[in-house]
Amino acid sequence: MIKVVLIDDEPLARSIVTEYLQDFPEITIAQECNDGFEGIKAIGQHKPDLIFLDIQMPKINGFEMLELIEQPPSVIFTTAFDEYAIKAFESRAIDYLLKPFSKERFEKAVQKWLEHRNRADHKTNTQTLLTEEIRQPEERNRIVVREGSNIRIVPVHEIQYIEAYDDYVKIFTQKEMFLKKKTMSFYESSLDASQFVRVHRSYIINLQQLTKIEPLEKETYLALLKSGVKVPLSKSGYSKLKGVLGL
Amino acid sequence: MLINLKIPMTFSAPALSTRKIIIVCLAWMVVIVLVEAYALVTTFNFSWLMSLADAVNMNLLIAMAGYITFTSLRYYQPNYKNALYLLAWSITLAILATIAHRYMMRWNLFPQEGEYEYFLYASRFIRGILIWFMISLIGVISWVWFFFQEQRAGEKRELDTMKLAREAELASLRQQLQPHFLFNSLNSISALAGSRPEEARKMIQQLSDFLRGTIKKDDQQLVTLQDELKHLQLYLDIEKVRFGHRLNTEIEKPEEALYLMMPSLLLQPLVENAIKFGLYDTIGEITIRIMAFKQDNQLVIRIENPFDPQTAQPRQGTGFGLNSVQRRLYLLYARNDLMTTQQIDTVFATEVKIPQPV
Image (tube, rainbow over the protein chains, first blue to last red):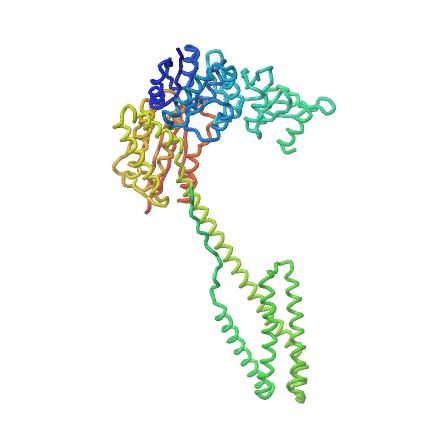
């Protein structure tokens, strides 16, 4: 038996998937979810083999939801999205259905998934997709993190700096620190480059938080942040920082 | 979208035609020639023939020098810095004209007239100054002429550019119908078609009416609040099919406000923004409130949606919908204070004021 979860904030959009799935007796719908939060819970609970996921949803979008799941299941995106996001899917061989989609198109997507689902590379596709730069406008302004069973939405202007930590990054705000399984280069490219500067292999700082640049030794410098934290600057990081600040 | 832009050719026609200008100049010359000749006849008792010849010759020389000045100014507008050049230029021309005049009159036309010869010699300075004065006058007049022509052409260009930009901008602001909305609505219709075909048909009708309304309306056109609300209702009905489980709307429209005028299609982007904001920023049911009322001869429309102050903060930027409305109000009324937004606890309010025609 194959279990699927439908995540879409429009009931009618889910109903069409339900209708089309009736022709696949081996597939059962474990749950229908109205938003990403319900989706996370349902995925944890049912451990589905496949999810149908909308992108634009309340509070957190489809990508952000996936980011918060340790081992995301296979995904078929159902979206009214325009092309730019779609391109990224194509290269990852993850299927997507552009709303409104026909029954034939839907069946093709499910068939393809059924045939390939046991291949190892298919499992990794969802993971790799998330390291790609599929950015929604709002994602430039916020980062979604998981804190125990809670989901927190951190506005980027509250971020002080980001530090590399093995496969993770540590995101520091004034009071807290969040761990997120992402790379430094991901944040370097996705955050607003006029606000966030990678000053070191292991550090990205928020310019709003910068108060001072201090010399440490000959040709090495420290960035002093508002909170009093000192962040080392690499040689290239120092010149990049000077460039952004217009020095 | 294709906007058919007709770019008008803006060669501003001069206020006076060239022929008229030539006639005026010639008439002016004839008058001056006659006055000068008369002055010579009465003051020095020269013959009319001699006096006329003197006046004609001198004024032809002035006209020549003036024409040179005029044409050189056409391509070369002196600024304050090189006004000195112009001065030197006019003095040189004046000296040349004076000398030419004297020699032409003395050696070619009236070689044996002792008294006239003496007069030519004695009057050379005053004549030179007179010629210089005339040349300068022509120079100044041409300069002013070209200056105003240039300015007028510039103004017209600017006006045309502004008009074009405005039209293009209004057209594109009107074209803001979100493809997202359209495709999701079509998806809903597709879903309904399977299970509830009657409802699908109804929704196709609503969507068609709504689209027709957005396409045919003219931006400059004013409509009554009642008409605008009718169009909005089509939009709300469609959104309710999609989000009926979460979306409630309340519309307050007192009788006295119904017939006030407003730019068409202004309300829908504001409500769309409120719905998007409300639906995507919160979980659970939301209510969008739309209130219209009359205040100080203005139509005031207030739209409220719930939001989450915690997570909405990064989105403080008003979003495309609001910006475009603000811009449209500015283009139509040249005022930037007609749209305001407000956040009270968990309510986000947008208010627009529409001045009423007096």
